[in-house]
Length: 141
Image 1 (tube, helix red, strand yellow):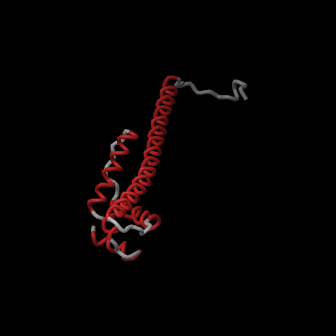
Image 2 (cartoon, one colour; image 1 turned 180 degrees about the vertical axis):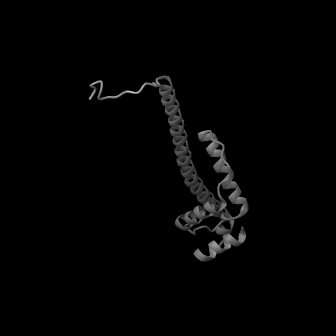
Image 3 (cartoon, helix red, strand yellow; image 1 turned 30 degrees about the horizontal axis):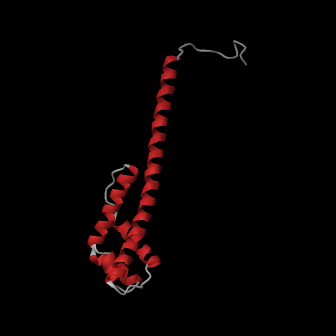
């Protein structure tokens, strides 16, 4: 894990204390847990941990666009880390919620299609007529 993170950091910016804390295994686990807890509490869905690689990509984009590099004390560093975590978690929650909504729509559509198919099959079965009709003979057309 550390090799991948160091490669990401080296390619994009210098490694500083905030980056090390933000990409630490402990912090990633905190983010994962908060995401799962919020989805469960707010939307009543139990989800698994998110893809490690996807989460790192999101975190990279968040830190590049939101890190202000203006921390001089431990408190400021902690606040900066918490801010990055909050932004990351909110971003992930929005994506997950959209995916859940789309999945529910998909399931509802499948259920509707199955109900319609069963209803259609039942109607056809009940109205099955074995007689052959010649539409022209009966002056229907």
